[in-house]
Image (cartoon, rainbow, N blue to C red; front, side, top):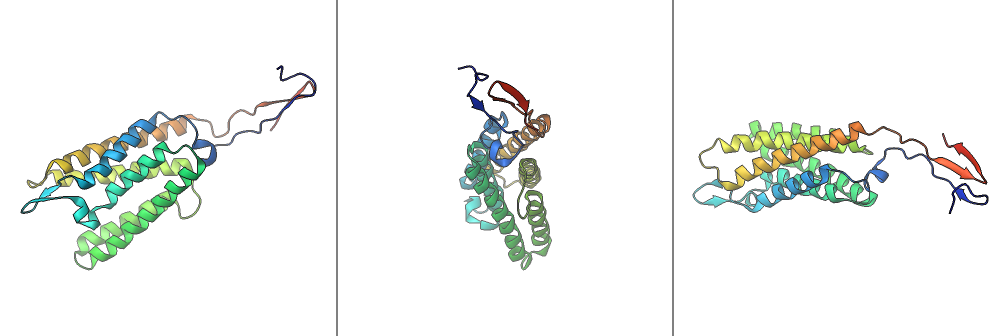
Length: 209
């Protein structure tokens, strides 16, 4: 049917970059971010260090946040609905709070470890935002988490007691950083507001501004 035919109304409002429309867009970063995130989460259950026997990170809860972040970013990468993306953002905020709480508990025993962890949790919470956010901030959060995780696992890899899980964690964090940068580039290359669609109504064309 001809959209300019009399009696036919086809109205489409301008599409502004938002979390609602972003959730359904095809993104090239999704595969890299998703696979890296899920592999990082899987490392939670792999041998990480040798301390009179192999120790898995899940046995030491304060070490869990980087792996949980991997799972959350993997879920955000595959989200196809605004609700799924919103749940992922809520999970990012919850994890940042968890990092702060973990830091407080660790600081009571080892202040030189706990205090930096508190600072990291606060920074991550500020990046994603306390209320309301934008997709670039979510991508920035992925980059920040990945870079911090790379530094953390890189230090672990220097220890003679490091096992396979630590090396895979470092590789996964590197992949997550790459996915985050690809995500950021995709957002930067896209205009803030799409070109308004033409409005056809009773044979007259106008632009919706």
